[in-house]
Length: 606
Image (cartoon, rainbow, N blue to C red; front, side):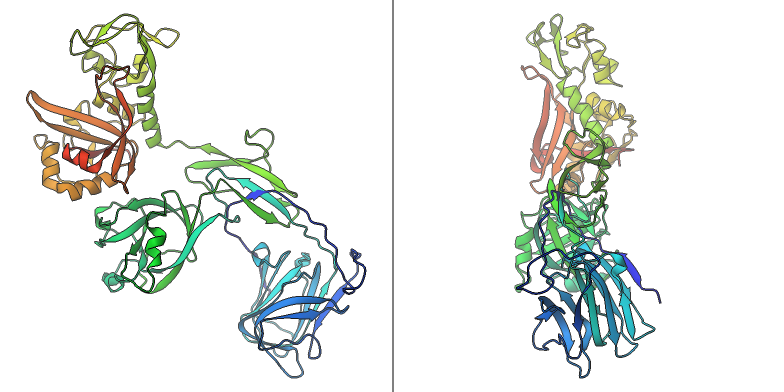
């Protein structure tokens, strides 16, 4: 049977910088002059019934070459055999810690035809830098392999079944064909499967996926990884929500769920959750300490086996958290080495460049010490475009060509000629209606050629601008999200305005305004709905007032579920300053709930 040969892969993120050491090998003995041997010369190490047998009681030994040089080997599972070199039991191995530079072949004579084994080989004794050659059966007692003409410096023999070995002969040229060099990758928040990211910490996590009703039998374990089908009600635990990254067995921390919040109250934002209990397992109290207040959203983690969606009742998973480092370094031996594409969600990889300005040609292969900079094409999400539109409305600078009285027609409130203002002016007059479909674009059309002085309508009821609802609906509309929402009254779910009740809180008709919605659903439910807010969503209140109804809506830019705060941009009205906007203002869940704000999402914004 033809053996299977495959390249090992190494998980990680890296930077390239190369240092090439000077190598000299003593191929004839420790007292012999050092020299570099000719490439056509062959040197030998023999392991037989009379040479280089091992001690069953230890796990390392110095073996001698035919010229008397000592080379250190490590091993496990070795047993002595008479009239043979020895036996390696299943799972045992033999590896040369010291280099045998330029290995050209390994010849093994077995005592029987039953062995199954794996040969790994590499320029260094870190086998993750090398190759794997699997042999499931042999047809002759004499087995020979030339390392696919790779000329490694190190090999590792791993027994997949008990291997009774009469002798091993190793031939090498005493020439290092794989001088190391280092590549430094400036990854800009990405990751690379073959590069070592900076590890925060790792631990063994008992894993159980729901899908059956028996998860409660594992409830008192210190931790488990839970596949989110929204069935678990567990409280009093620290929970970390994960989404799959675009590398196998790699995940991104998407959300941190506050202790005391039921997963059932969460949405399906994260595919998996890590749940760590405090003090329930006195034998392993450290996991809580690892995770609580130490893991951040955006961290990358890897597990040592795939996380499936089927129920498992007993499976331990090694979980490793990594800092999302800006650069990492990896040592290479292959000349040339073809660079692998990095991974970063939401962007497209363009190429590696020699400078941070991405000038010149992209680099695809490396053969020496080098630093590389990764260029991506940033793909701005629809949600971010909505936020960007709202932000642009809040930041445009303008000055009136003549005084403009505020839309309430109060003489004390004016946009004063010659004064610079920031952000569209607030209005609920006809100027709001005029600019409804594109508040910023239409306002800009009323600026003179220097894009600064406003020369449009100046009447208190006609000057161009926006209010809270027209700016939010305008930010949606210019980015392709069509709703029937024109003011806070028809931004309430149930008004046939293409507005969703985010999180599934209950409501009835338009008379059931937001104070009643908050009261009927309660804070626990509404808080869980706040958790689901994403950039581009909104929070809205509409309550009765002395003169009818009072309403306000804010566009969400971010949510911190750990601190239970929502950050927004809002067109907030007259304050006497040079802007009518609040930008990146943060409000606690309790403040929002007490003021009757509910979370909403327009149809078409996933």
